[in-house]
Image (cartoon, rainbow, N blue to C red):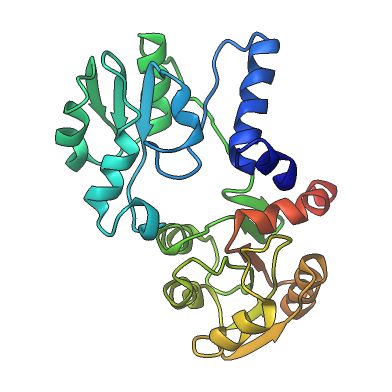
Length: 262
């Protein structure tokens, strides 16, 4: 798909975004929740004049494109706000930047998803509302599948793990802060199985294993993701648990297997 997209002067992500939006229109979708791919101002999704813009949190990632500070990154993300839109913030500190775009109102809330839905509907939601994103925190038996793909995501994940000891099976993209992610993931367990994903951005499994040895007592390298998870499961044993993480691409590659286990 990448080659076909480039032939018409588009990126793969731009082509996928256009195809998704066309499908939404053809299906007469009432409401679509669209996540920006990278930032906002220059992202393919900025063609949408969204009635509600939600910014969950801001951490340092893609600094070569978005800027080296959280404020610079927040500015890039909030550039998609159209005058008259509602803005929902998971962090209060960005209210000043949001006001620069003349929004109709700004809501700061811990539960960003619920607040965004209420802003869209113009009323409070009644009762409990459950919203889940596949691959963000899936519990399968004792095992956890979570696509925490940067240092902030890894920190969020480790704080919420239900057990103290996992065999960590991970793939990490080469452009991430690999050392920071590994330093955080070692709090989840002392054994690590390095693997890689089916994308050119993925760090080679052997290189990831080499870097992981600074943080983990026992490290193995298994290039094939499915085999890597199987090896981690073998190391964990019947009463142990595996944490599969580090990249949403990894969960994509494992998706068929995950659905089978479920």
